[in-house]
Length: 616
Image 1 (cartoon, helix red, strand yellow):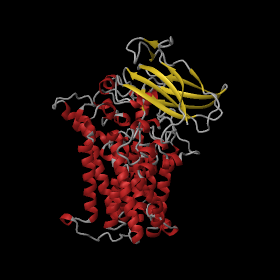
Image 2 (tube, rainbow, N blue to C red):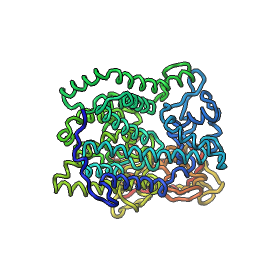
Image 3 (spheres, rainbow, N blue to C red):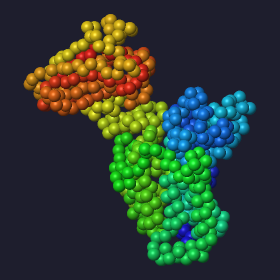
Image 4 (cartoon, helix red, strand yellow):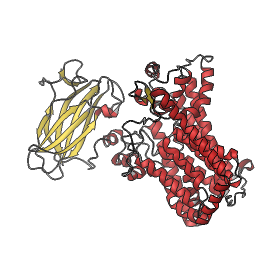
């Protein structure tokens, strides 16, 4: 069934006589390119900020292993590359199989997509004076620039498929919503080498090919559908969902289903060809597993998996840590857009709704639902070509209602502002802290450019903040300068006086310092604990930062624990800092215990002048 074009030929003369959707496309491309080349050229960054780092390096590792080092089983070349380039997370990108060989964690589809750009970089690296080792500057640049081209192609085809069903104006606004208002911008312009950008383009090509195939079935169209479905699944196995796109597209009723069944019977050979090609592409991964391990199927994610019966849906949608609508609020409009899509395009509604819900369900079922350092839900980005349809339907509905259109315009501007602010904070501002975000901290910083960093960063560890105008009835309960202490103290380079408490790899814990709270305490009583500290070398991994801990007891019963991580509050090595934090005292508590834990860090820290106060 051919789609019905809704005012697809309506033109509006924009600058240079461009249509509105084309002008919008060029504007979106300009933002992506400006962000990539001027705001944050990632191919120039070192170590874990480089283009080929973290997950990208894991997907990409097939290419140097095969074409440079000819070592796909033992990966003996990796240690030297890891030492030189430090892409992170070390050997976390592969694991040792019982066969004795190493197996890549990720499937090879992304590596195959990157192969042309790798080939160009490898041919140019040595002539340009760079090591032809797979990770030097030419490889970083080639993969980045290739990712940008892939993004622009995907956005072009998104425009094409939307124009098959919506007007120029609606298509133009929908493109602006996705690029300016969602995390798609970050995952194309900056971290575009991750799979989501490339899969986004595969989705758009698949939808485009599916529409054309049902207009005029052909062997070439069927073969391309099979290739795209297989390639998506070879890139991320969960993208086998894409097979539903050619199966369900345009089926909006039982009558349409019967008509589609007739098409399939008439073109059974073409359908078989598509399945055969998709299976052959996916089978490439089985060939690799057989070569590396002797087994046809290997689960390479080890202890990571899905909780199918308990998906993390609320967290995925609205959590401060990685909520989709928190970091890409414009995508919320796609939800009411499904109601509009049902009225405007009943032929598309059932299939798109089902596939979008399945994408959301699979994303939420993954146990690591925050997807590492994801800026929002990056695992949904590849399905944005489908979510673009209810979003466009919502825009179409809004356009016919003046008051709602004005309100939507205001909200859209706010969404765009928040998205651009998030992109800035993720890469330059420093307010977005991957895997650490929580609600109190989020509410403290959201949309702001100037904050009291120390007060905000404390909320990453303790959710309590004294917000009174000033403290009252202050009583000093405990002071320790460590001059007379004999446990874990050091006279070498003390913070103050002649001795300081010293924690390092060998001495992880301080003694526990007991403080009697006294009686009676007001029910609004707070405790302020302060310490002066200096890091030999700053610990940057937040889970290894030294914890300043306060525990409240009633006799021997633990009532409450509060803590902050100290190294959050210094900029670098050797800086001395006086830090304090407040916590509300449980009304039953009769004593508090303070201690310090170096959290398995191998970096030294010196602490001095511990002080405890109680106030109301």
